[in-house]
Amino acid sequence: MRGLLLAAACLPLAGCDPIFDIAGAYFPSWILSMVLGVVACLVLREVLVRTGVDKHLFLKPAAYTGVFLSVACWIWLVFFAN
Image 1 (cartoon, rainbow, N blue to C red):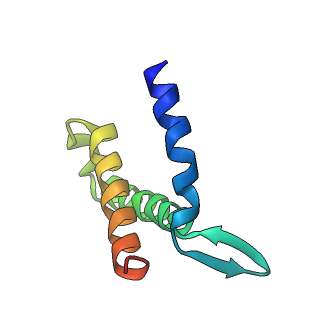
Image 2 (tube, rainbow, N blue to C red):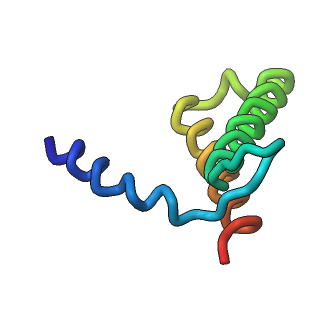
């Protein structure tokens, strides 16, 4: 219940971030950051699989989640933060 109330309290904050226009549709900047983070994570995974490093990763979900979050936050900070 506490998590649900916290999520509901954060909803009004969604309109506070920069918005950009793609073909007449407006999107918040965090969507672009997330998409580019996922793409970077998939590209890195493919590189690691082809080089054979992927099979030696200890916690694959944590490693790839870390890559995703790092890239997504970096993109948001570089391009959209004031």
